[in-house]
Amino acid sequence: MRLAGFETILCPVDFSELSGHALRQAALLAACGHAKIIAAHAIWFEAPAYFTEGQVENLKREFSNSIAEAERALAAFVRSALGDRAAAVETRVVEAMAADAILKLAAEVHAGAIVMGTHGRTGYNRWMLGSVAERVLRDSPVPVVTVRSQPERPIRHILCPVSDTDVSRQALSVAAGLAGCFGATVTALHVIEPHGANPMPDLCAWIPAEERARCNIRELVRHGDAAAEIVQAASEEPYDLLVLGAPHRKFFGGLVLGTTTLRAVRHAPCPVLTVSERPDPRTTPAQPFSRSE
Image (cartoon, rainbow, N blue to C red; front, top):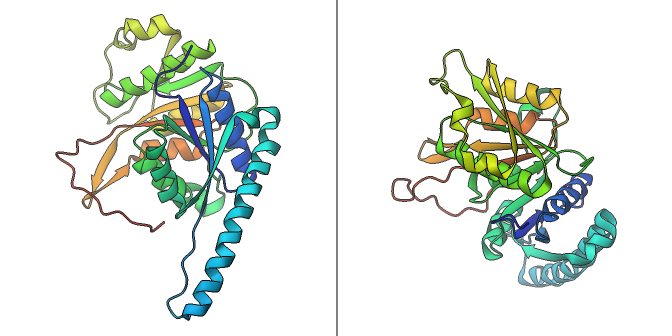
């Protein structure tokens, strides 16, 4: 079975252990319909303004050599991470800042998903994602899978938090499609918050019959803070994937992810597939292209 929209998976690589974990997670997802994986590394050169013309030319030559070396290193890294499966993986070295490279290449290759490693933090920084991961999560028009650890097994159990919103319906549809492909079970979790929006009157009736026909879906209702309950639920059972619908909110003319989404992505013990709700371009002001992190 081929899952529509996941024919091409982009996996950014920075040669860290997390990149290896992300490649292996991408390979698991690609097994659904034999999707194509593109492993990409971003490299960027910008000479200081005070360099002479001769110094700039010397740096450009060194940079060209470093690109060739990066291409060899990327191919070797993919082989080390995936073994025999590496033969089917396309590798790309892109000249751009990391987040820009990921988003631009995803558009160019019509990627259906991006799979990337993201660092777990400790202490004060436990609330922070890396700037590249957060930028990609915020700006990617396609689902993003964030990976923090080595995938232990094929996808058999999926957790999908739901609320009575369009983006939740999109996320549940993606979860059901993956579950149907992998023979997995989906747990649809609805959290009733003390001061939140009106809860669903009947979670069982809310789930469309067509999604139930695609896979085995069970319902779970909890009470409390949404992010905390999502993370707790993900920790209590051996879920292989958390599929999360992520609304965007306007903030000073730009767009940001909601706090529930960010907290779940930061703290969930399993990989998180974030399905973003894209704003209507007719009502959202265009943002200038930037290379800043």
